[in-house]
Each structure stands twice: as C-alpha cells, then as structure tokens.
Amino acid sequence: MATQANNKPNYQQREQSDNFEQVLEIRRVSQKTKGGNNISFSALVVTGDKKGKVGLGQTKAPNVADAIKKSIRLANRDSVTIPVVNGTIPFETKAKFKAAMVLLKPAPKGTGLIAGGAVRTIVEAAGITNIVTKMLGSNNKSTSAKATFTALKQIELLSSKYKIMNKK
Image (tube, rainbow, N blue to C red; front, side, top):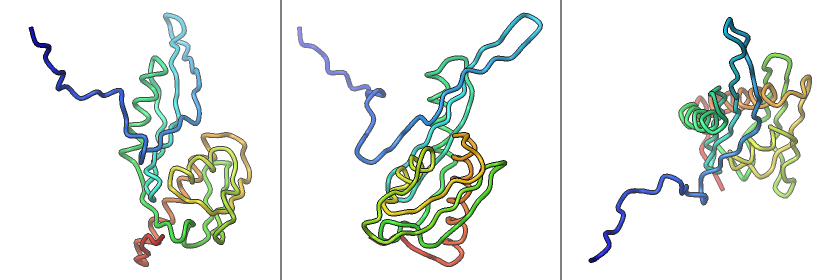
C-alpha cells in the first residue's frame, strides 16, 4: 500500500529569510466584572521585511498565542513603507505620542544603530542599518514604539510627497 503525500501547506513554517516578527511586550490584563475577574493578555508586535516596510500591532486576547497572532495580523495590515537611502532614513524627524517623544536622525555609513529598546527593534524591522535616535519623555515600551511608528509614518508621508525612492 503506497503512502499518500500530504499536499496541505504547513502553516507552522514561516519564511524567515525576508520576514521579521518580534514580540516587544506581553502584558497580563484583568477586568473586574460582576462574576469575578476576566483575565486576558495584550501583545505588542513588530513586523517588517527589512526592505523599508514595517508594521506595529497591539491587541488583546484570552491567551498569549491568540494575542500574538492577532497582533501580527494587525501589524501586517497597518504597515508603512519608508525609503531607505544608503541604509538610513532620508531626513530627520521628530514625533510625539502621549508622553513619549522620539527623534530620528539619518547617520553616515558605518555608524550603525544607535537606538535602544523598542525603537531599535522597529528600525531593524524596517531594514535601517545606520541611524541615530533619542527617546525623550517616557520609558514605556508601547508609547515609545507608537511614537517611533508615528515618526516613520511622517517619513512615509513626506517621502511620497517629494517622491524619494529606495537606494542601496
């Protein structure tokens, strides 16, 4: 009796060569209700292709695995594409989200990533190799990630306005 080959795609395997997915933060959150406590988990995830496309997603779900899956789906849906010119961003930008403020500056080749925490993960996912950043105001990962994402949205908007393209 011959064995039949399984033609179904394997959803557990992901292409690691060009997709970047990183969980920044997982929080356990609870809500007081009439029947007791409702416990769920919040996940903050960054996705990118290391070629200028990056996304950020934050959602809640009853368990950690579902929260991460939902966050990845949201990050892929709400992504921005920024031009990466010689491994850096085309111009300086500053953005604020709630109490967090981030400053992103282009850097010459060989500088590397001078960034910390959530900012570093987001610019790595975008494929930026030379950048100088400064985080002001808040130490919270989610607000600093959202401030960085707001800055990248500004870059996307201005680069589309002035038609700046990706260059290696």
